[in-house]
Length: 179
Ligand SMILES: NC(=O)c1ccc[n+]([C@@H]2O[C@H](COP(=O)([O-])OP(=O)(O)OC[C@H]3O[C@@H](n4cnc5c(N)ncnc54)[C@H](OP(=O)(O)O)[C@@H]3O)[C@@H](O)[C@H]2O)c1
Image 1 (cartoon, helix red, strand yellow):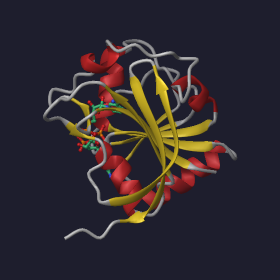
Image 2 (cartoon, rainbow, N blue to C red; image 1 turned 60 degrees about the horizontal axis):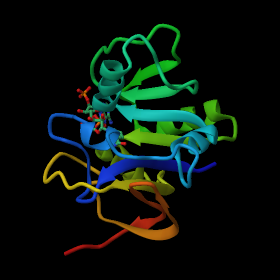
Image 3 (cartoon, protein in one colour; image 1 turned 180 degrees about the vertical axis):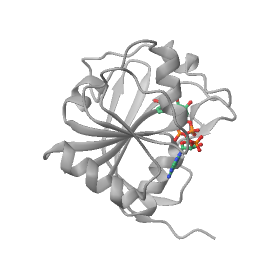
Image 4 (tube, rainbow, N blue to C red; image 1 turned 135 degrees about the vertical axis):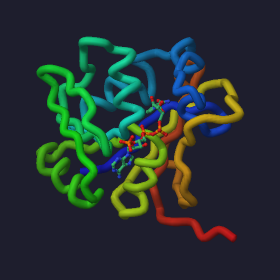
Protein backbone atom coordinates (compact mmCIF):
# COMPACT_ATOMS: atom_id res chain seq x y z
CA UNK A 1 0.00 0.00 0.00
CA UNK A 2 1.47 3.29 -1.15
CA UNK A 3 0.44 6.84 -0.23
CA UNK A 4 0.67 9.16 -3.25
CA UNK A 5 0.42 12.88 -3.73
CA UNK A 6 -0.68 13.20 -7.38
CA UNK A 7 -1.24 16.70 -8.71
CA UNK A 8 -0.70 19.12 -11.56
CA UNK A 9 1.53 22.15 -11.09
CA UNK A 10 2.74 25.23 -12.85
CA UNK A 11 6.41 25.12 -13.78
CA UNK A 12 7.19 27.43 -10.86
CA UNK A 13 5.54 25.17 -8.30
CA UNK A 14 1.98 26.37 -7.77
CA UNK A 15 -1.09 24.13 -7.95
CA UNK A 16 -3.65 26.97 -8.04
CA UNK A 17 -3.59 30.74 -8.34
CA UNK A 18 -3.93 32.86 -5.21
CA UNK A 19 -7.66 33.08 -6.11
CA UNK A 20 -7.89 29.23 -6.31
CA UNK A 21 -8.33 29.25 -10.09
CA UNK A 22 -7.34 26.23 -12.20
CA UNK A 23 -8.21 27.87 -15.56
CA UNK A 24 -4.50 27.84 -16.51
CA UNK A 25 -4.55 24.04 -16.02
CA UNK A 26 -7.89 23.09 -17.54
CA UNK A 27 -7.09 24.82 -20.85
CA UNK A 28 -4.07 22.53 -21.45
CA UNK A 29 -4.03 19.56 -23.84
CA UNK A 30 -3.89 16.25 -21.96
CA UNK A 31 -4.46 12.67 -23.14
CA UNK A 32 -6.48 10.84 -20.49
CA UNK A 33 -5.33 7.53 -21.99
CA UNK A 34 -1.72 8.65 -22.31
CA UNK A 35 1.26 8.08 -20.04
CA UNK A 36 0.92 8.81 -16.32
CA UNK A 37 -2.66 9.94 -16.82
CA UNK A 38 -5.07 10.41 -13.98
CA UNK A 39 -7.82 7.80 -14.82
CA UNK A 40 -5.41 4.83 -14.69
CA UNK A 41 -3.84 6.21 -11.51
CA UNK A 42 -7.25 6.60 -9.88
CA UNK A 43 -8.10 2.94 -10.49
CA UNK A 44 -5.33 1.95 -8.04
CA UNK A 45 -6.74 4.19 -5.29
CA UNK A 46 -8.83 2.96 -2.36
CA UNK A 47 -9.18 6.15 -0.30
CA UNK A 48 -8.57 9.89 -0.72
CA UNK A 49 -7.61 12.83 1.50
CA UNK A 50 -7.95 16.50 0.66
CA UNK A 51 -7.93 19.87 2.37
CA UNK A 52 -10.89 22.20 2.71
CA UNK A 53 -9.90 24.52 -0.17
CA UNK A 54 -9.55 21.61 -2.57
CA UNK A 55 -12.91 20.20 -1.45
CA UNK A 56 -14.57 23.59 -1.89
CA UNK A 57 -13.08 23.86 -5.39
CA UNK A 58 -14.65 20.50 -6.32
CA UNK A 59 -18.00 21.61 -4.86
CA UNK A 60 -17.89 24.85 -6.89
CA UNK A 61 -16.86 23.18 -10.12
CA UNK A 62 -18.91 20.00 -9.97
CA UNK A 63 -22.17 21.30 -8.50
CA UNK A 64 -24.55 18.51 -7.61
CA UNK A 65 -22.02 15.82 -8.38
CA UNK A 66 -19.04 14.17 -6.77
CA UNK A 67 -16.30 12.70 -8.96
CA UNK A 68 -14.93 10.02 -6.61
CA UNK A 69 -16.33 6.59 -5.72
CA UNK A 70 -13.74 5.99 -2.99
CA UNK A 71 -14.15 7.13 0.64
CA UNK A 72 -12.72 10.62 1.07
CA UNK A 73 -11.43 12.35 4.20
CA UNK A 74 -11.70 16.15 4.03
CA UNK A 75 -9.47 17.99 6.49
CA UNK A 76 -11.25 21.02 7.88
CA UNK A 77 -12.07 22.87 11.07
CA UNK A 78 -15.51 23.78 9.69
CA UNK A 79 -18.87 22.09 9.11
CA UNK A 80 -18.72 22.01 5.32
CA UNK A 81 -21.67 20.77 3.23
CA UNK A 82 -21.57 17.08 2.27
CA UNK A 83 -22.55 15.98 -1.23
CA UNK A 84 -25.61 13.72 -0.98
CA UNK A 85 -24.73 10.07 -1.48
CA UNK A 86 -20.96 10.61 -1.43
CA UNK A 87 -18.69 8.87 1.10
CA UNK A 88 -17.12 11.99 2.61
CA UNK A 89 -15.81 12.28 6.17
CA UNK A 90 -14.90 15.69 7.58
CA UNK A 91 -11.95 15.50 9.97
CA UNK A 92 -9.45 17.54 11.95
CA UNK A 93 -7.95 14.45 13.57
CA UNK A 94 -4.25 13.60 13.77
CA UNK A 95 -2.70 12.59 10.42
CA UNK A 96 -1.55 9.19 11.75
CA UNK A 97 -5.08 8.41 12.92
CA UNK A 98 -6.66 9.42 9.60
CA UNK A 99 -4.02 7.53 7.63
CA UNK A 100 -4.83 4.38 9.62
CA UNK A 101 -8.55 4.84 8.91
CA UNK A 102 -7.86 5.40 5.22
CA UNK A 103 -5.63 2.31 5.06
CA UNK A 104 -8.35 0.15 6.60
CA UNK A 105 -10.99 1.51 4.22
CA UNK A 106 -8.76 1.10 1.15
CA UNK A 107 -8.55 -2.69 1.67
CA UNK A 108 -5.09 -3.07 0.14
CA UNK A 109 -5.39 -0.39 -2.49
CA UNK A 110 -3.29 2.79 -2.46
CA UNK A 111 -4.04 6.15 -0.85
CA UNK A 112 -4.18 9.51 -2.64
CA UNK A 113 -3.52 12.86 -1.03
CA UNK A 114 -5.27 15.09 -3.58
CA UNK A 115 -3.96 18.35 -2.14
CA UNK A 116 -3.22 21.01 -1.27
CA UNK A 117 0.50 21.08 -0.83
CA UNK A 118 0.32 21.91 2.87
CA UNK A 119 -1.74 18.80 3.56
CA UNK A 120 0.66 16.65 1.51
CA UNK A 121 3.41 18.24 3.62
CA UNK A 122 1.65 17.17 6.82
CA UNK A 123 1.60 13.56 5.55
CA UNK A 124 5.32 13.89 4.74
CA UNK A 125 6.03 15.35 8.21
CA UNK A 126 4.38 12.25 9.69
CA UNK A 127 6.54 9.97 7.51
CA UNK A 128 3.41 8.81 5.68
CA UNK A 129 3.99 10.11 2.14
CA UNK A 130 5.63 7.60 -0.21
CA UNK A 131 5.34 9.10 -3.71
CA UNK A 132 4.86 12.46 -5.40
CA UNK A 133 3.49 12.60 -8.98
CA UNK A 134 3.55 15.99 -10.68
CA UNK A 135 2.11 16.88 -14.07
CA UNK A 136 3.88 20.14 -14.95
CA UNK A 137 1.82 22.49 -17.15
CA UNK A 138 3.70 24.88 -19.45
CA UNK A 139 2.88 28.01 -17.47
CA UNK A 140 4.35 30.01 -14.64
CA UNK A 141 1.99 31.70 -12.17
CA UNK A 142 4.38 33.75 -10.06
CA UNK A 143 2.32 33.12 -6.92
CA UNK A 144 -0.42 30.84 -5.63
CA UNK A 145 -1.03 27.66 -3.63
CA UNK A 146 2.34 25.93 -3.22
CA UNK A 147 3.03 22.46 -4.67
CA UNK A 148 4.74 21.05 -1.55
CA UNK A 149 6.10 23.58 0.94
CA UNK A 150 8.61 21.26 2.62
CA UNK A 151 12.30 20.42 2.20
CA UNK A 152 12.29 16.82 0.98
CA UNK A 153 14.75 14.54 -0.75
CA UNK A 154 13.05 12.84 -3.72
CA UNK A 155 14.18 10.13 -6.12
CA UNK A 156 12.93 10.38 -9.71
CA UNK A 157 11.44 6.95 -10.56
CA UNK A 158 9.50 7.68 -13.76
CA UNK A 159 9.12 10.43 -16.33
CA UNK A 160 6.85 10.97 -19.35
CA UNK A 161 5.46 13.56 -21.69
CA UNK A 162 1.67 13.72 -21.95
CA UNK A 163 0.69 16.31 -24.60
CA UNK A 164 1.47 19.68 -22.98
CA UNK A 165 2.61 18.16 -19.68
CA UNK A 166 5.99 17.08 -18.34
CA UNK A 167 5.15 14.30 -15.89
CA UNK A 168 7.41 13.15 -13.09
CA UNK A 169 6.97 10.42 -10.50
CA UNK A 170 9.16 10.61 -7.41
CA UNK A 171 9.77 8.45 -4.35
CA UNK A 172 10.00 10.39 -1.08
CA UNK A 173 13.44 9.55 0.29
CA UNK A 174 13.25 11.64 3.46
CA UNK A 175 13.63 15.16 4.72
CA UNK A 176 16.34 17.34 3.22
CA UNK A 177 18.57 19.29 5.62
CA UNK A 178 18.66 22.89 4.38
CA UNK A 179 20.55 25.87 5.75
N1 LIG B 1 -3.35 21.54 -9.66
C1 LIG B 1 -4.02 20.51 -9.15
O1 LIG B 1 -4.08 19.43 -9.74
C2 LIG B 1 -4.68 20.67 -7.82
C3 LIG B 1 -4.82 19.55 -6.99
C4 LIG B 1 -5.39 19.72 -5.75
C5 LIG B 1 -5.79 20.97 -5.34
N2 LIG B 1 -5.67 22.03 -6.16
C6 LIG B 1 -6.07 23.39 -5.75
O2 LIG B 1 -5.04 23.89 -4.93
C7 LIG B 1 -5.59 24.74 -3.94
C8 LIG B 1 -5.10 24.22 -2.59
O3 LIG B 1 -5.55 25.07 -1.61
P1 LIG B 1 -4.80 25.16 -0.17
O4 LIG B 1 -3.34 25.39 -0.38
O5 LIG B 1 -5.58 26.14 0.64
O6 LIG B 1 -4.89 23.70 0.46
P2 LIG B 1 -6.04 22.70 0.96
O7 LIG B 1 -5.29 21.62 1.65
O8 LIG B 1 -6.94 22.32 -0.12
O9 LIG B 1 -6.89 23.53 2.05
C9 LIG B 1 -6.29 24.06 3.20
C10 LIG B 1 -7.33 24.04 4.31
O10 LIG B 1 -7.58 22.69 4.71
C11 LIG B 1 -7.84 22.64 6.10
N3 LIG B 1 -6.80 21.83 6.75
C12 LIG B 1 -5.54 21.57 6.31
N4 LIG B 1 -4.90 20.76 7.19
C13 LIG B 1 -5.76 20.52 8.19
C14 LIG B 1 -5.68 19.74 9.39
N5 LIG B 1 -4.57 19.06 9.72
N6 LIG B 1 -6.78 19.69 10.18
C15 LIG B 1 -7.92 20.34 9.85
N7 LIG B 1 -8.06 21.11 8.73
C16 LIG B 1 -6.98 21.19 7.92
C17 LIG B 1 -7.84 24.08 6.59
O11 LIG B 1 -9.15 24.59 6.35
P3 LIG B 1 -10.12 25.24 7.45
O12 LIG B 1 -9.28 25.61 8.64
O13 LIG B 1 -10.71 26.41 6.77
O14 LIG B 1 -11.16 24.24 7.75
C18 LIG B 1 -6.89 24.75 5.58
O15 LIG B 1 -7.06 26.14 5.49
C19 LIG B 1 -7.10 24.69 -4.11
O16 LIG B 1 -7.52 25.81 -4.87
C20 LIG B 1 -7.33 23.42 -4.93
O17 LIG B 1 -8.49 23.49 -5.74
C21 LIG B 1 -5.09 21.90 -7.38
